Length: 148
Image 1 (cartoon, rainbow, N blue to C red):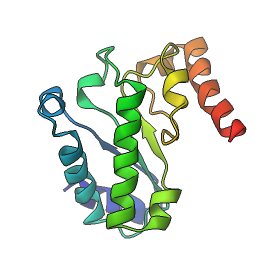
Image 2 (tube, rainbow, N blue to C red):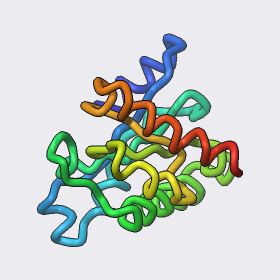
Image 3 (tube, one colour):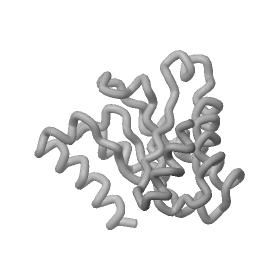
Image 4 (spheres, one colour):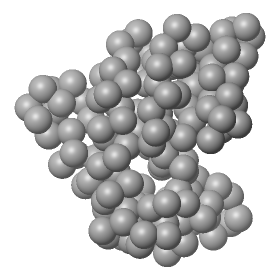
């Protein structure tokens, strides 16, 4: 169902942020990759062109809770999603698709998250309403991209 909605949005020349992520009990049960890959497949079943798709790894347990995945946890999932894209879609899509992180990103944790090689940016929630904090988040990613 969500894949069809995404495909329709793309057909109307909109861009899509495909959010994936696991619940706390799924993470604790070691099912993070399984859950995220099932969610990716739901999109892949309906999407034929990925050029206007951004993937956001947003663990449900971190949304608005103040809990955030460690930089290493986030990087691990981003690498796995990129590998899934390579194996299931194409190497070109895997290398060109932006994979961003969105789970209680704030001015305090953004720099360490941005240092991770496969985190291409952030999906910012509540922190986007706080001007100086949002600027810190934007600058953490901007400086990463300039340095690359």
